[in-house]
Amino acid sequence: MNFIAELAAKLDCDDNHRFELLNAWFRQLKKNIISQVAIMDQTSPGDRRMVRRLKNVNHVRVVTIGWLLGLVLAAIFLPPPDLGLRPASGVVKSVLVFLAVWVTYTAVAVPLYLYRAWLRARVVPNKLEYMLWVGFETLCAVVFAGGIAYLLLGR
Image (cartoon, rainbow, N blue to C red; front, top):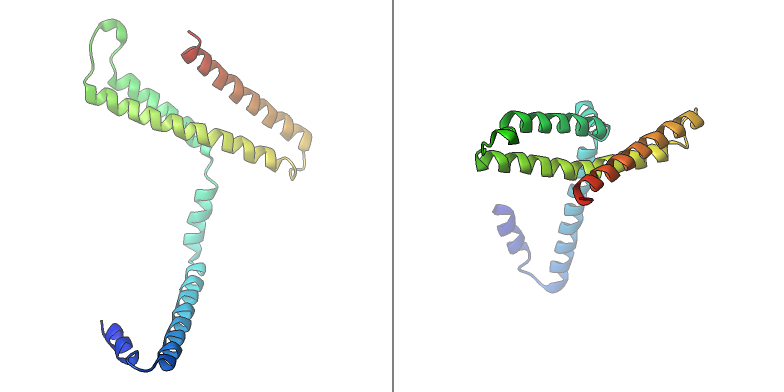
């Protein structure tokens, strides 16, 4: 609060002097912001490793583990349909919300993974084998997505 009172007292002068004071104040503010950005750029090696790890997360592995977890949770908490039991609505809603979030994450992560894989094809030393493998992965993903769409919409 002292800074604001001091600035107001300094600004109680003629227009030219007020302009010079504000200009000096903005220059100092700009220097402070630049120095803070420089400090943020000089993060510790641990912080840089954390950011690098987050960028290098294998999203396809996360998707696979998530689907396994979601299906196991559904199998544990939802009763088989042939028993005629109705599960609690909270359980059904929780499982459906988890699976809906996971479908959305999968719909973003898998195409992103395939896109990055195709971009990487230019720099790998064994281009033919790599492109065959990525092509096979892409084909499997497209066939799987088409199969799911057929099961859900084709009937």
